[in-house]
Length: 91
Image (tube, rainbow, N blue to C red):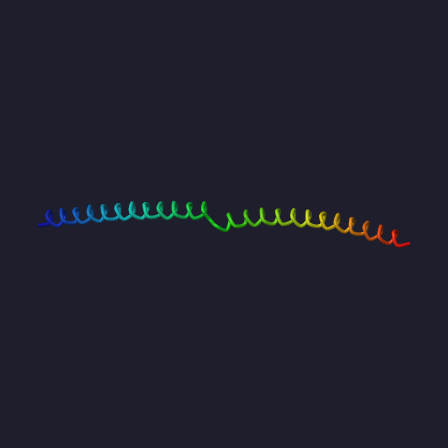
């Protein structure tokens, strides 16, 4: 009888060990899937993409503003020259 109890105890210990080992493998696999998903999210993080686009847009906007200031300055200079020529012409 003690032999049968010992065998059943051994069987229970073996099944407990197998269950724990499978559970640990399952947890490791789940953790790996979470890590992969997390890495993919970081790689395709739209905040990074949008911040890069925002920097490009800001740079283009500054370039356009500078070009517009230059253009307006040239137009104003030509207008002032024309106004000066008209003023001198009337005298």
